Image (cartoon, rainbow, N blue to C red; front, side, top):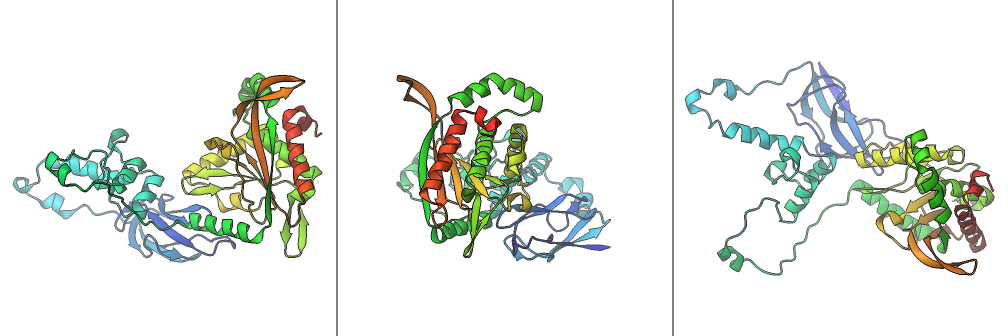
Length: 405
């Protein structure tokens, strides 16, 4: 019996999707719930599982095609079994290919199957046959880096050129490559331009001494990890501080809708997570009610899902305020861009030991520059600065946030 494979029902905010990668080809055997194809939307990559065991009879939509919700993309013949190649059974022994070639061919054909999702996307987007790429990974697997080097003309196992060839080779080559933006990168670009062109954005800065937070993490970190199974990081302190500050400065937690200002009576905190395809902002819903452990676990889960392409659309929708941590990559100071329709974003940066004056004494302290970018149409400079000072006071006296002060 033939079974249709269709695009899943897409949320209202997503108009269409693009076929990113087929993991099977026509004629391949498939198992129920096995991932057949990745669909790339503006926000996440969706997996489409096989609805039944059988043979992938027909692929209706190819890699790169744009598809709509519930559109037919493939047909599976349920219960069918992949036929063995006739030549393999009928070929006389005398005419058989050399025995040594068979294992090599088998190993070669397995390269594409062993690619990671990131490697599959690189290979698909650049139309590369992984079997032609020299492998440096474990067990002879092709890594993403192997593919990138292959694109750049630097195969890992390429033979050294002869002296004559080296003399004839042109020097100072300047290779270029044109690669279409992914759907996610295109959407990120659109949202950044929307933010730039529709928001009167301004950024204010302050600095915070994280010495007491560091002491708390050092003294209680081991007990916290034993009790909760997760490390106590800095982000949970910033999320808790932001929630408390947003309660006292509700305009920073608001958004603009036409000529109206919407005040949100809850704190849904978007936390920026970096992926290979770009920055995504999964949402901690009702973060004001979450404990430190719940925040750390949720962020760790989001980061894992983002790396593996497992984030759902609903994970990214909503959010009343965003926190981004450029310090992860060593950024000392930056001006983060507001994530519409939100009206403000808090930027964290790298922690540096700096000389400061405390009680008349010069000491070294772990200092971080923090920034708030905000929509100046509804948030005045005073509100933004007071909000940032509130964040600073809580982090420099972490017991305050525990008491809701």
